[in-house]
Length: 445
Image 1 (cartoon, rainbow, N blue to C red):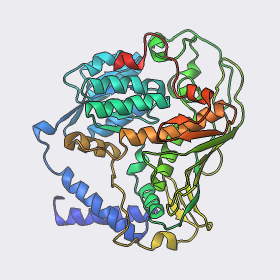
Image 2: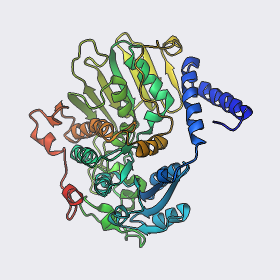
Image 3: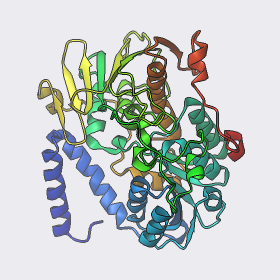
Image 4: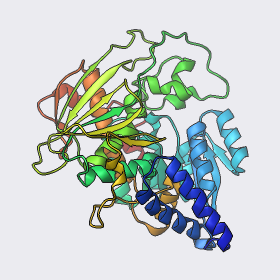
């Protein structure tokens, strides 16, 4: 419980004020407030010795450090080990978290008996290899989005998590945002009728380069940073934050913001564990130079879902595009819409939001703290709100768009059950990528 009546009253008032300011309707804010109060009460409970959690961080840049900082704010959680191929990042994180062990080789970290869970904040091309190695050593995993670099990697991560009975949370934290949950609950309960279109607006990719090569910084193990990807001379614009704009290491905005917003589209359509059946794209070609950003600067990818008479996703289309206000817009067949982003939720008619759902309505899982949800599941052994299968299926949508773009806007037929293309050998080849020796998925499995 909160400490006294006054603090409890102040908590309720401040929380409700914030919820209403965020655009949540009063009826829904009351529900959210109840969950927040329960979480606040639970936070007051003492932590048993067996419930203490020791974190190992792999990838000590801004995102990984931020995630770990989020974790250690929870009672009973400490960071005991850090890993990064950049010694500046590694040493800074070790100092910040007072971690007694640091290394540039993730295999040394995951082998430690004093590490219970691993937070992965590496560039995308290292997610699968580090996560699989951690799970094989009995660690639970919080892995940043996008979960994988390829669909084959996601399949291997899912198989390992299930085979090792590991808790795996994907860092698609919008599933723990009240606004996004409200939008998806309204859609799932037919507030807009059958969904004609979902627009996922994710922004464009920078178009820059070619960039010059330069000496490798003394603090960076460049060969290890490249890992499974082809060896190239050091270009600082390939590394750290800028890795996002190279298909060798990521998928541009398609897998950066797309992993967030296409995940919400899947959630709203009730298609977790599934996916589209057709993909077609248009896009501006990137600069055709070896050391220039090579993700498509502008693009529109249209995904069509299967016919399902009576379902809200009956033949729905998700249009993922680089223009428009960042966010997700659900559009019904009669033109009514609901738009949601990280700051607000709006609708074509206020009544769409203000009218409460009936008591019999479908309710989605509630999480108001993405890292807290993961840590609770580490203790309970339940699956978190963005479990490995959710993360895999949502980023698969993004990967399908990337494959279409890389094949020049090819129209692709996809079997979401078999996770294969229909009659397109070139597209099937892009479900995985060759890995540079000595790295293979098998080497860490």
